[in-house]
Length: 204
DNA sequence: AGTGCGATTGACT
DNA sequence: GTCAATCGCACTA
Image 1 (cartoon, rainbow, N blue to C red):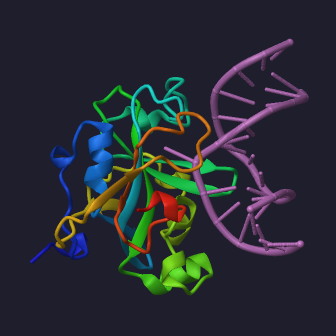
Image 2: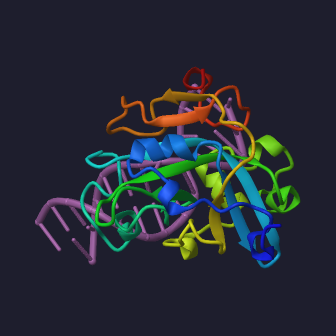
């Protein structure tokens, strides 16, 4: 029996997370994101990620540590959250060793628990539109800057858990929405999954 | 102090 | 398919 505080999910240990950013991006596919709010639990299965490794000019850590991005420089497995375009929050997982700035963007989830709450948060009914895309994902799970720096390897308001299902088939493509470093194959997704964002051509 | 520009989304032609 | 909204941040002066 899992402890009540675990909400029935199995926490993933930090030691299980690959140090390498690109490996972490692949590793997170098929894992669960668990969001605990006072009203209840929201969760989903990660179906799409992007790696922003060391030395990547498109990464927020590229120009060094600042007040905004300092959680990218902490030890791996912490949430880095920022506001994109003044409109949408983005959920990232910090990667690499402490002191090294890099991370993985969680782009899409397949909704599991708390669907009714997500529908209310997003003001849409369609399951497919709830968490397909990074901004929608954050809105569905009530994620904003207040959760920046949260340890995803501890049971709390936001954490990462194991999925019982077998490992999905993972596809690779270029990342979405970038002008710099646009050609690098650093996006990962579950092949054939309808909750993956992006154009068809990138999801084969 | 001012400027330019996004790791996006939703509305609209 | 196109495009504006919206704001924090990095960079220039």
